Length: 242
Image (cartoon, rainbow, N blue to C red; front, side):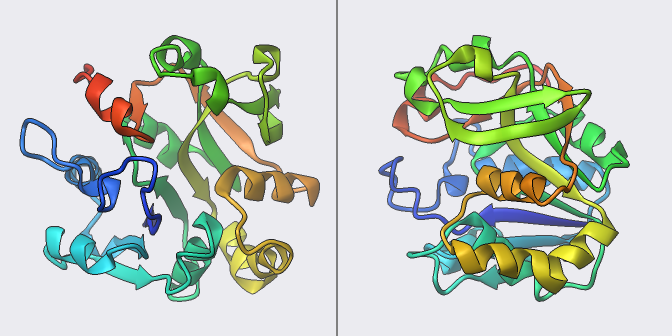
């Protein structure tokens, strides 16, 4: 099993001037260090962890002591997550793959649940998202539709202001089986990128759903935190299990 950490973005909304995964908390640990520690506790070795880099990639390599695998997306300014993901998949042998956003903190239960999932495509969904999201400023401007039936996601990625269209919140932790990874490498990603090189992750999953691939929700109440803007860093308080 391989881990792919998506961290190629410019982090423009944070105003940090460097990749937000390198934000240092009061305990002197960076965001990425906290997540690497969890991955280590689950037994993932350095050679099984891949960084999909772009913006200030050398800084990420330096701050993580060049211990891991780093795949640079030279088109990071004009592309998005899936293009970066594809650059990594081109470099690795087919295997089970867990793709993780690098701008989130998550409890160990998230990783445990996704590792155990037997579906071809599975993604962590928080059903207790409203309580957390209402702490964000202008939270209504950062809502995406996500509808689930019998653990299968059938709609996600569209902007919405209707809370009834949201059965949970996509965290940014998704697993692809080895067979699915082979399909992605052979033609699926290139086909979708051929239509939109700037496609994001949720809309990519929706394209797979439209192509009759089943995307399964691993749903539950999870402790996690997403960092999109300066306020997200300010309001974050250490939560049990994170």
